[in-house]
Image (cartoon, rainbow, N blue to C red; front, side, top):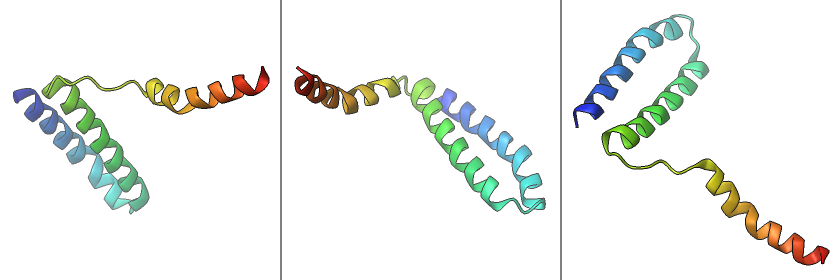
Length: 78
Protein backbone atom coordinates (compact mmCIF):
# COMPACT_ATOMS: atom_id res chain seq x y z
CA UNK A 1 0.00 0.00 0.00
CA UNK A 2 2.84 2.37 0.81
CA UNK A 3 4.45 1.64 -2.56
CA UNK A 4 1.20 2.56 -4.29
CA UNK A 5 1.01 5.83 -2.40
CA UNK A 6 4.66 6.52 -3.26
CA UNK A 7 3.96 5.96 -6.96
CA UNK A 8 0.99 8.33 -6.77
CA UNK A 9 3.10 10.97 -5.01
CA UNK A 10 5.78 10.71 -7.70
CA UNK A 11 3.10 11.01 -10.41
CA UNK A 12 1.71 14.09 -8.66
CA UNK A 13 5.17 15.67 -8.63
CA UNK A 14 5.60 14.92 -12.33
CA UNK A 15 2.22 16.51 -13.03
CA UNK A 16 3.13 19.54 -10.91
CA UNK A 17 6.34 20.04 -12.90
CA UNK A 18 5.13 19.23 -16.42
CA UNK A 19 1.56 20.50 -16.71
CA UNK A 20 1.93 24.28 -16.10
CA UNK A 21 4.30 24.85 -19.06
CA UNK A 22 1.99 22.86 -21.31
CA UNK A 23 -0.97 24.96 -20.22
CA UNK A 24 0.94 28.23 -20.66
CA UNK A 25 1.87 27.31 -24.22
CA UNK A 26 -1.69 26.07 -24.85
CA UNK A 27 -0.51 22.60 -25.91
CA UNK A 28 -3.85 20.86 -25.34
CA UNK A 29 -3.14 17.81 -27.51
CA UNK A 30 0.27 17.27 -25.93
CA UNK A 31 -1.26 17.59 -22.47
CA UNK A 32 -3.88 15.00 -23.38
CA UNK A 33 -1.30 12.52 -24.69
CA UNK A 34 0.97 13.17 -21.70
CA UNK A 35 -1.92 12.52 -19.30
CA UNK A 36 -2.88 9.28 -21.02
CA UNK A 37 0.69 7.96 -21.04
CA UNK A 38 1.25 8.98 -17.42
CA UNK A 39 -1.99 7.26 -16.37
CA UNK A 40 -0.97 4.07 -18.17
CA UNK A 41 2.47 4.18 -16.58
CA UNK A 42 1.08 4.80 -13.10
CA UNK A 43 -1.47 2.02 -13.51
CA UNK A 44 1.13 -0.48 -14.65
CA UNK A 45 3.53 0.57 -11.90
CA UNK A 46 0.91 0.20 -9.19
CA UNK A 47 -0.08 -3.17 -10.58
CA UNK A 48 3.48 -4.41 -10.74
CA UNK A 49 5.00 -2.91 -7.57
CA UNK A 50 1.98 -2.18 -5.38
CA UNK A 51 -0.10 -5.31 -5.85
CA UNK A 52 2.75 -7.59 -6.99
CA UNK A 53 0.77 -8.84 -9.97
CA UNK A 54 2.68 -9.88 -13.10
CA UNK A 55 2.16 -7.80 -16.20
CA UNK A 56 1.58 -9.95 -19.29
CA UNK A 57 4.17 -9.86 -22.02
CA UNK A 58 2.90 -8.10 -25.20
CA UNK A 59 4.50 -10.86 -27.25
CA UNK A 60 2.00 -13.34 -25.77
CA UNK A 61 -0.84 -11.32 -27.30
CA UNK A 62 0.84 -11.33 -30.71
CA UNK A 63 1.39 -15.07 -30.46
CA UNK A 64 -2.28 -15.59 -29.54
CA UNK A 65 -3.38 -13.53 -32.55
CA UNK A 66 -1.00 -14.85 -35.18
CA UNK A 67 -0.64 -18.54 -34.20
CA UNK A 68 -3.98 -19.58 -35.79
CA UNK A 69 -3.08 -17.62 -38.91
CA UNK A 70 0.27 -19.38 -39.06
CA UNK A 71 -1.45 -22.77 -38.69
CA UNK A 72 -3.85 -21.99 -41.56
CA UNK A 73 -1.06 -20.81 -43.84
CA UNK A 74 1.06 -23.87 -43.07
CA UNK A 75 -1.90 -26.14 -43.90
CA UNK A 76 -2.51 -24.35 -47.20
CA UNK A 77 1.12 -24.61 -48.26
CA UNK A 78 1.40 -28.37 -47.66
